[in-house]
Image 1 (tube, one colour):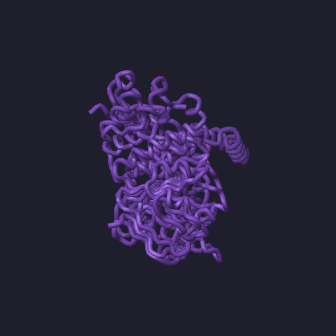
Image 2: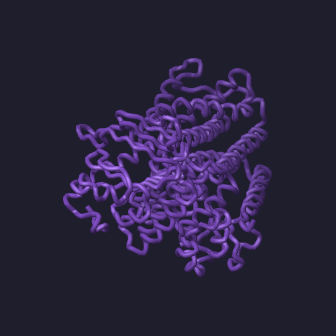
Image 3: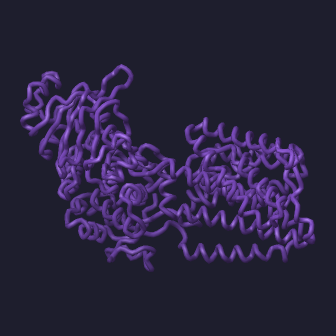
Length: 377
Length: 247
């Protein structure tokens, strides 16, 4: 076979060989770089102070939420302003499990799965609505969840409840454990998002977002696609909420179900760049840099956040990463596809497969020789 | 056995009867042209076959199975591929990704096989040079080609082409015709709506004419075009003598 994936020498365009490659950096390189970053972050509690670890926990929590919101809205086109429903359910999941004698840290993945399971019936209701109605309904779901949870007196009602089972840990162990748990959650979230986008589901999501009707006619199971993404987003947000419950030592309905989570995940995704994996990471970093430098200035910090959002929306609607990618062509996570190879090779390949009936031999294919370098306009 | 069979299919939009008891058989490997004035219900009939539109009455069966209750995705996976008159590409994806998505979903291929199939479709539809272009940046010819390519990538047994030659220049039409002939040569049945009647009569072996939702003629192209009811539909235009005539 002359067609190969991720060819060792992709620039041999004249050899008449077609290569289908992932766009951007090579997969192995990204994997190796990711591993290095993970190892560096894993040693952070040894290097930095406890205050900094706490800050990093919050960073990981917001990054997890942003990655999930970006999957929902940036890739699958479902604009939700109610993901705090699953943040809250994840937090309360940890609380309920801990009150029943579970180790709170071990309860984190269980609580995330519970949030994801709740998302299945919720999606059945929400998916009957489209566009703006869907968005408002997600918020209604979040508020409903908060009201229901607040009315359960055994969980502390509206004032919330401390998470039992954490006091036995020394402050140092607690800080380290929380940190590693948060690091695990964000790593798995990024891994899932990257894996989804590289899988056929990645193309499927983008197709459904771009044109639902023609996606259906091309065989896309639209509802199933949306449901998978919605449930995965609930899983991630549930895990983020579970981390919050542990790191804050308590759960309080008005804070864990707060619409502020939705605002923050939308803000960082939008300024970073929706529809790219890099965007939410950049956005979250920027958010924390701004917050750290401006928090002491009171109201100014909110005004500057608002101004940044407005400026980004006006000048680079695709977010900062979108602008960077447009200028430089850099893609850190190879999720798209690029074809490289000789036009002649492609036609030969087509003829081989189709018994010589390729129309490309007298079509524009024959004039396309020069075009076959890296086509990325 | 007929690959596609419509029996007494009826569809209304409010008071307007857009498909009026249409019955139609398309055999395996057939190439059927469909003509008729604007508003005759041709595109609606495609919608009824592909699942985009739900008929109020009648039966649609494909490969011996009644598909009335199946959604477009399920019908596509059974082997019904369609194009849209106004192209509907996935604008944010590259041309190759548009096609790959179709080989993976409608075509039900995975991994290397799906990429090979997509590359082959690229070659056959003359889109190789545009493989890495975002589909949203394509011109009209590119978009029309991509419509055909994406439908072809679903590995259809029946392909519904909705005015793929509309708005193109003569050489462009000729190029598209080559593509359609090559698809046909593989045994794919095709139903082809076209206003450019000349493009059709050279290629199809059967022509059907729709008017006001009804099937008014069905048979060999020359016979259909000389049919009095077809001439009447075209308001006296001598379609046979002026095959390029547009309604």
